[in-house]
Length: 486
Figure: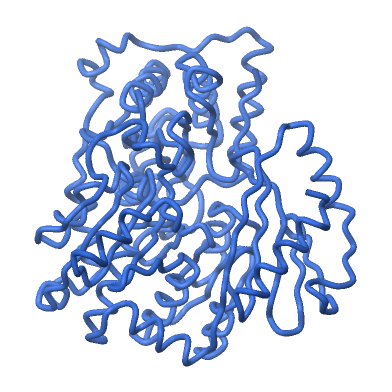
């Protein structure tokens, strides 16, 4: 069975493809690659160090974390057992933790990489493995391709994973554990904690049963009301993705109990969603624009990195503050690559993954939420009012995403349609230009756009649209469906 990486990591359904056997195959290939090419520091020289390596193996332990999904801690131990049998030191999280925690620890300790057991925002039936590189960012496609090839090579050669007994892991000198206290301290250092505490905002958090639960209370050192903070491997029937349809109960809670702001994070807490004081959903697109404005008004400079599905609001604000913009295919691994090439200020994508490179070359939903609260504290305004100010400044933008599930056979037909599509008009307007960087993105002269692409992590088609009115966005979505005959 071939194991393939998608937009961010390898993900599969538990007990189908995501099994202990396949996790061990993945771990053996990772160990083989790290012994040969992957253990050497990558990325910017100032972010890495080759100190502490001996005999081809790093002396610094590789951090491995896990989320709150079914058997995630056990899968993490299984992965670690193979790595340790291959001579690697492994440091296992003593508790569930956010994915950005692993990225930051890898960078901070100068580890050769990091491993996270998570399927992020996927449904509860799924789990996955994410690899992080030594600089603290998502593993590059070139690296994950080497791991894929090594799995196939090992299978052809009949090479079985080396492993030690799970019961013996904690007794090995190659084993250690880490707490998340230093990561919590790092997040505190990225915000004006004193100003936030003085502002005395009433904050609610919906971690969607995910790995972000409990962290805001620890960081802010004040009580934070949580919805869906308990352990529930089935996620209470919700997908752990902080989008509007999954936050209905949270939106009601924020409004009826008079919270100043509601923050939501996904299954591994690297994505952000928000709710204003009136219970209105604040989309990740709006959050990206607000955070860009907040950082620029703090006097910070640098490149802005966005994916092809990200709002045009970012382009308008970047132009206002004279900041370079780079547009890339979807997937934070592409943003990480551009971070390494530029002097980045912020990077983000439509799905709610926003990264602040001064923290780590990784998206971090908790930090994004904390910066929203810091912005409120600076402006002495609640989130809804700040967003109204932004709309008055740059105009309204209405974004819609439509997810369409297909059978595998139908996906092939849709893929061919997307590849060959040559539209002349969209929503009764002349097409200005077409971008085929990732699927097909169709632009109009008024900055409206439609994007259609196949997901890199799930068997579905995503259709995105943004326009100055909700009516036009809906018309473009419908037009996109008609283009593809669905």
